[in-house]
Length: 288
Image (tube, rainbow, N blue to C red; front, side, top):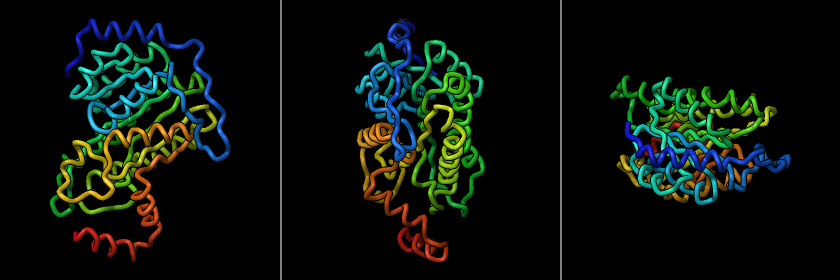
């Protein structure tokens, strides 16, 4: 795993320590329609994005930084992050393999030692199309290790601090692919369904602990992962558009942040169909 030169990391650490507000910024109260306390102002807030070296995660990190947040980005490889972090003292690059528990714990401790986190975004993702007619167990388990177990590792590392101070927000990047079973989604879809279920349960457990929880369910977004698809993706949006939708969702206190609505609302309707209708429709429209 690579890292930026130590002088840059040190400079960022110093600025973050000096800039961390004391006491922490108060969050506005939420209305009964808002499932989470809105986060509309990011100046002075500290965010850790895991799995954000490309795609939606990186675009979200850049949007948060532009909005004024102090940003820590982690991923297994730096890819698009390293040069950006080297140019901005309020952006830190912390290499991390979410599949290695010791690395997650050590990285979380180092980040928390510099101050509390206002938002933790789990955006790590792994995707390979797979069907049951050509099952690959190793690949199935790799999806689970990155997409789901990695989220558990990160939550386990940051939640005790949030509980102790009765504050913070955890956001999990899931997918509409987890809403119902789809062809070619044998490996990917179940892990995203698990993330959504996890977010729902976390919300129920943490809503009275001062901790926000949200789940992000994008449709088709132009990323290195979706570039593998060999079909025309309906309502395709850019990573930058996805990031703006995420910030909008947090600002509105949403739990279920899904987009683009012109696509996801139709999928929500499909979730209501009985299997007798759902299965034939999927086979008809996908041709699989």
